[in-house]
Image (cartoon, rainbow, N blue to C red; front, side, top):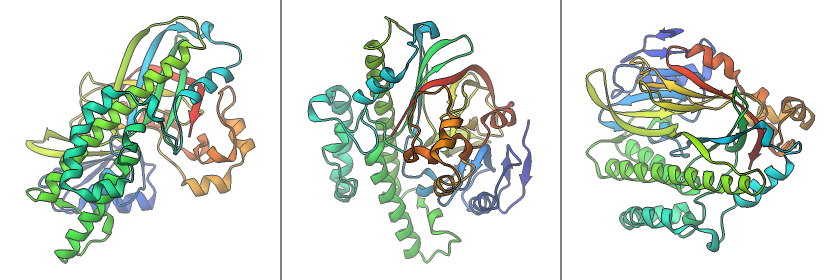
Length: 397
């Protein structure tokens, strides 16, 4: 195995697949490792970096409790990708029209579909769960501030590090790949339960080193509600990605020669909780910026908007709880990136990619991220590379 560091804390160790860990990230890993309900150890992936309460790029197995802030507010955030039956020769010399067609069909940033473009199949499947949740916790509907708007956000991208890309693989075959989650409704669910966990810790007079590692106890009504809400938001995120993929394919069919989808790689979360068995116990596995990489399971590991991405097959590493990195991982904060880099820097670092090259997305510049190739080298024991992708079009919010 290629664990680079094992740090012994009480009650469990932290096993880290990189030597590139900032002091802030190390402190967060230590705090999580000291939680009394963490099982066996904490696994830190090679893209690990500091987050809110706990690090992004960590895998946290727990018994009897879940930390809502460790899951975060972008519940179910993840990736989907599909290979097409065409190759680079089918792409026009100028890809501006391709990007424009995608942007016309998929709302980005705070945008959402109007009522005419809401596809009822996904809405109908999700509505009963939404009604059940908001019926039991009316405050959720108010906090999410979307009511019917959650329906209009199915098939929308959002902003930040979410993206849609047209890529070429190692054989110049065309792929579509995108990254998004549960949008505003997942954000509302996350914020509600993070606040609830803090309130319950205060009521217990718990002395926490960071209020963002407050937890919910299994067997309580709030825990059961959170697990139900998590499952719903993760389902919503999967539906959102599937709907977006369909819209992107419609956009490509309007601009490219006829094609078929020849390979769906995977629709996978990388901010989520799953019930799994590890090291002799049934546990709740929180993957915060990590994907499941069980033996033979496919996953997607994106780089930044100017770097390569990877379709991978998991090796089922027990030490990583069948997990691997979810991407390159940030090297600097968004505010730091905006201070350090200019629009000209972004243009230089995204040469050959049809994308925005303005200050509005400079915080997503490749230079703000870790080297994806170094991340992949550090997890050679966790995954095998199946395809290597390089974007030629990148749409961001």
